[in-house]
Every structure is written in C-alpha cells, then in structure tokens.
Length: 220
Ligand SMILES: [Zn+2]
Image 1 (cartoon, rainbow, N blue to C red):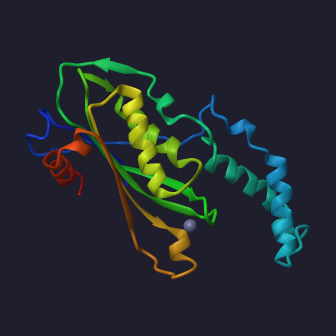
Image 2 (tube, rainbow, N blue to C red; image 1 turned 90 degrees about the vertical axis):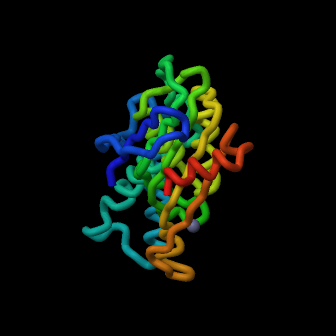
C-alpha cells in the first residue's frame, strides 16, 4: 500500500480529504551507519547456524547464503543507534494551525525477541507549533528509520512520536501503528493475519481527551 498524505485546513475542524498517494523509498542512505555492521561476523555466524541444524554450508545451494543473510541484516538494521529526529533536516514556516496527517506508511521491522520480521503501516498526525512544519516525506523517513533496527512495536511507536516532537516541536503528536508479527504467524500460537495496534500521544493529544478522540477518528 502506498502512503497517503492528508493536510486538514484547520485543526480537527473539517473532514479528512485524501490527496494523491506519495511513494517513499526505503534505500539505505549514503550517510547511514550501514558500513559499521560487521558483515564477516554475521557471515560466519550464519555458517554456524547452518552447521548446527545439520546442513552442509558448502553444498551448492547454500554456498552464498551466509553472505546473502549478512547483507539482509545490514539492510534491515542500518539505522541502529541513529536518532530518527535527525531525518527532520528541513523545516518550513507556514501560516497554518491545521492538522498534518500522513497515513498508510508501510514499514518492515525486525522483532528483537525472535529476529523475524513484523510489518505493517503507520499513521502519523501532528499539530504544528507556531507554523513550523517539515517535508511530508520526512515523516515517512522517521518511520523508516525507527523500523530499520531491532524493535518491539510499542517502542517503535513511542520513538516515532518523540522524533516528531524533537524535530519540529509539534504541539501535539499522535502515532498509530498496526502490524502483523511473523513470530505470531509462523511459530508459537500460529495466528496468521492477527494485527497488533499500538498508539503514542504527545502534547495536546495526550492531555485533551476530546482532541485525542477526534484525531483517532481520522486515523481508523
Ligand atoms: Zn517476536
């Protein structure tokens, strides 16, 4: 699913009207910490896993697998240790008090308890403070950065909210994340399709019950 961006003209006063979808790239940025990931170490660890499960790491089908898995982890964990608010490098001053809502931001992250993926969508809404806004793609980049590391969904949701507050000093932030966890779908209780929803609120959305209810009505 592609991300959609909605900007409401006045805070929470009018019905959402969805603008054309925007696509966001998930490529590893040049300046990321990706190069610090120890590819050789992961490669030899995967060789050990293959041996441990009774496979022959030297057989034709597996010969490049350890390297391939190492590159996979490099991609999935490239933002380890990166402050997600650093993505909010551009800020603009606009005459707006309206709600900014970026919906349906797809992400894939890695559960830190099982090292298997969880994937889903994030919706991020904020009320600017003194008209300070950021590029809409930056919101999606914040989601991307918080996802590309070992995570639990609850913490990821809080990290997105904190990054928006830190990045632009928004007076209210609401983050809604829904995801399917492979550790629930493919093992353990084996419930494919089960969705986990987590939310985080900052500022006015945390303090004011009515505003929180209203913003949630736009997200569902
Ligand atoms: Zn898990």
